Image 1: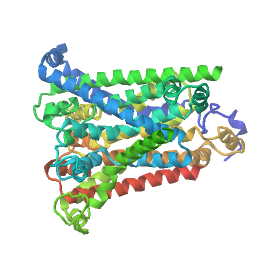
Image 2: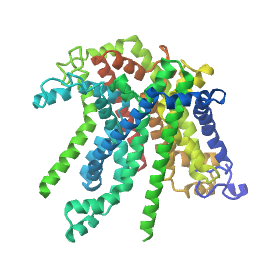
Image 3: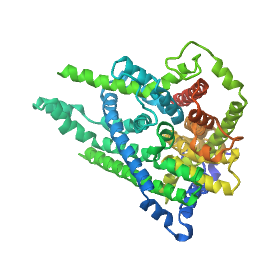
Image 4: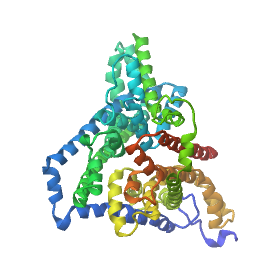
Length: 296
Length: 259
C-alpha cells in the first residue's frame, strides 16, 4: 500500500463518494440496466407484440367495439375517479392537520399514516372483508346505533371496493398534499382576516389556491394507482363490477385468450403512462412556481 | 362558531386516523378467537390457530418458499441497485434521465401488466413454477426501492472524505471498503429491508408464476380468503404483520445509526 503520489491526481469526479475511475460508472450501472431490460422491458415489449399478431390491430378493434370491454374500461374510470375524489377530500384535512397542527400532532398522524402503509395490500383487503361482512364490525355498530335494523350488504359491492381502495390510496394522497401545505405561510390567511375577510373567504381565496399544486399531484397519483388495482376489487367486489386488471387476469387464467389479454394490458399501460405523465407535468409546474417564488 | 369549526375539524381528522388504523388493529385480536368463524370482537382466547398454521405442511412449505425467494430477491436487488445508485449519484452522463426513469419505472407499472408479461416470457424460458422465476420477478419490483434508498444516503456523504483518504495513502479498494461503504451502509440496509418486504408481500406476480410446489405465503392467504375465512388466516396475517413491523424497526434503526 504505497503513497499514491505516483498514481497521479485523485482519479475521481468531484462528487464521487468512492475512489474509482470514471469508467467504473458504466460497469456499475450496466448490471441493473441489463437486468431490467431482460426481465422488465422485454416482457412488456413481448405483450405489445402478442397484442399485434402479424401487425393486425384486430384485438384493439375488438376492445373498442365490444360493449363488455367498453363497459369494463368505463367502470375502471368511474371507480378510479370516484375513489380519487373521495381520497383527496379525506386526505386534505388530514394533511392540513399534519402541516399546521404542531409537532405532536404531526408525529401521531404520521404514525397512523405509515402503519397501514407497511401492512400488505392483501392483508388490508382481507381485514376489510371481515369488517364489512354481514356479521362484521361495521354492521354491528350501525345496528347498535339504531341506524339500520338488519345488516346491509357491504362486501361484493362497488361500495366495498371503494372503501378498500380509498384506504390503500390515502397515504399516497396525503404525502404530496402535506409537502405543499407545510410551505404555505399561514400569516397570509391571518392577514386576510385582519383585513376583514371571513374564515371561509380566507380559505377559498388564499389557502386553497396555494395548496392546489398539492391537490393536483395527489389526485393524479391516486388516479394513476387506482387504474391498475387488482387485489382489492377481486376480493371486495363482485364480478359484475369488474375492473380492467381483473379482466386482463381473466383473459390469461380462464379465457386463455392471450392476444386479447395482452391488448388489454397494453391499454392499461398506456392509460397509466398518460396519467403518470400528467403527474410529472403537475410536479414540474409546482417546482417552477416554487423557483419563481424564491426568486422574488 | 370558531370553536365548533375547530371541533369538527379535529373530529374529521381523528376519524380519518381511525379509518387508517382500524383494519390493521383488528387482525391481531381476531386470531385469538375460540370461534371457528372470524369474529370481531373475538370470543375467548386460544393459540390453537397459530398451532394449526405452524403445524400444517402446506403452510410450512409456503413459508420456506417465501423466505428463500425474498432473501434471494433482496440480495440480488441490493447488489445491483446499490451499484447503479452509486454511479447515478456521482456522475453526470448523457441519457442519465432515461436510465433513472428505467430504474424507477417498475414502481409505477401496474403489477398485473408485469405479471402477465413475465408469465408469457418466463414460460418460454422454463422459469414458470420455479423459485428462480419468482426471484427474478421480485428483484425487478425491488430494484427501485434500493436505488431510491441508496441515492438518499449517498447524497448525505461528505464528498471530500474520499480524496482525503486517497491523499493519506489508502488504496482505492481500501478507501471503498473503509470509507464509502460504511457511510452508505444505512441506505443499503434499509434498501435491502424494503426489497425483502416487497417480495415477502407480493401476490399478483406470484399468482401467475408459482405452482403448488413453489407457492408463497401470500398465495396461501389469497386462496384462503377466496374460499373460506377462518381464524387461521388471521393468525398468519398477525405473524406477517409482526415480521413487517420488525423490518420497519430495523430499517429505522439503520437510519438512526447515521444520524
